[in-house]
Length: 412
Image (cartoon, rainbow, N blue to C red):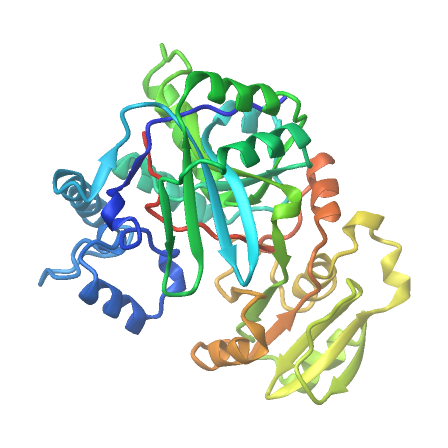
C-alpha cells in the first residue's frame, strides 16, 4: 500500500515560471552555464552557483558554498521570485518531449516506506555522493529536484489524472530545449483524498531515478531523528520530494561507461585478457548492443564487439543477465581491478541517450582511454531486481523524463 502526502510547495512566481527552473546542474557545459547565469537573473542556477558574480569564489561542496546557497534561496523568496503555497497540495505535472508526454504526480513521500522496503530500489549508489547530498540537505534544508518513482498501471489513478488535466493549468510553458512543461494544482481536500485512496491500491513503488537523492534523504532523516528523539513522524524531515509515474510513462535508455586505463596495461595485453571470458570481434563503426550478452568496447579509435562466452552465462540467474552486470563480473573486477564501482574514480558514467559521437567527444575531453556501451535494461528486469531486493551495478539505467530543479521545492 503506497501513500502520498500533499505539501506546501515553494514555486516560481507565475510570470517567471519559464525562467526559474533549470536542468540538472551537471548537464551544463561551463560555457552554457556562464551564458545562463549572465543572461537570466531568475534562473535557479543562481541559487546553485550563488557566488557567480562575487570576486571570492567558494569551493563546491564547502560549508561556505552551502551557506551562500541558502542565502541566495532566501533572497529569491524575499524578492518574490519564488513563492510559498499557502495550502498543502498535490501537483500533476506533464512533460512533453519529441511528441511524447510523461505525466505524473508530485507529492511528498515517507522515508519510512523506503526503510521498510515498500519503496524498492534496483541500483546501488555511490557512497561519497550520498554523504555529499546529505550534507547539502543538512545545511540548505530543501529538496529542489524530486525523486522519480513509478508504479504498475492503475486505471483509477489514470482517471483522476485525466480529470485534473481538464482544468486550466497553473503553468504551461516551453523551454528553449523544446520541452513543454505543464502543471496543475490539486488543493481541494476531497480531490486529494481521492488520489490518496487510489494510491492505497498500489502495492509497491519502484525508484526510477534519484537513488542517491533518496539515500541521502534517508541519511538526513536518521540524523534528524537522532537529534530530535521525541519526533512525531510528521516533521518535514520524515518525507522527501517525489514525482510518481505509471510505468508506461517512462523511457529507459542505456547507461555507458568511460574508464581510465592503468599505465601497465597495453591494449594488446588488455584484449588478450578479455579473451578469457569474451569473444572479441573488431568492427568498423560505433556499437550500441541490443542484447544483454553483448557489450561495445572503444579503445584507440577502434570499436570491438564483446560477447560473453556461453559457458559463463550459467553463473547468472535469468534476471541477472544484463550487460552491465556481465562486464562488471568478468571484465571490470578480474581484469581492471575495479571492485567498487561506487567509489572508483577511474570510472565515469555517461547517459546512453547522447549517442556515440558525444560519447567519443567526452572521452577526448577526459583522461579516459576506453569506453563501454551496454544494452538498454527493460522495465520488467528493473522490477524483478527490485522485488527480489537485489541491485544492479550503479548507473545501469538512464531514465527519462528528467525534471527541472526549482520547479516545485520541498522545504525541510
